[in-house]
Amino acid sequence: MTRLALVTGASRGLGAAMAEALAPDYHILAVSRTVGGLEELDDRIKARGGEATLAPLDVTDDGAMQHLCRSVHERWGGLDLWVHTAIHAAPLTPTNMVEGKSWDNSVAVNLEATRRLINYVSPLLLAREGARAVFLDDDRAGQPFFGCYGTTKAAQMALVRGWQAETRKHGPQVEILKPQAVPTALRARFFPGEDKTALVNILDEGARLAALLKAG
Image (cartoon, helix red, strand yellow):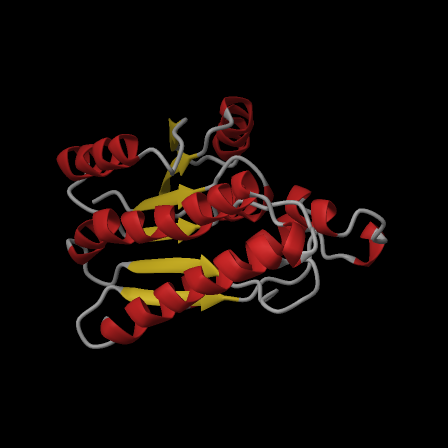
């Protein structure tokens, strides 16, 4: 049976790096809005001898996510791994100046899309023995100017930790990983003047996180 890994937010950053590192052991179902990034990921996966199915979809599109998960059920019967890295990084701003669009987008991607995907993906994970869901933590809650991102990321992690506690006995296994600082577009938006030479290589970090999953 083909082992299948769904990676949401797969076109760049740690999502892409983890998808590439997991590819030799899983067929990668790569989801992202960025078609070009997905195609580049597909090329790298094929160069490693792996296979991928590209799904250029928006995780906030409820109908698209329902169709995706229904298609997974019909084609593969279930999922072995779900790695959720899709995130919205709203601009840093004082809390009293947070504007509606940034807030709404942060809630839609970081919280509401995660809630819906847990609902839709959970049955697919339960269909495979030992299946896991993986999330990446980034604790910015309460830090100055991180009102949108910090609040919605903390809410996402609270939702995930609740699911994790609920599924310990009967599955699926829910894991939360803490990545090291890597030079992603998200981080550059938050820390534009940062010395990138002090950060960990993103492919190395993707490989490290993937190795943790394989070891687990």
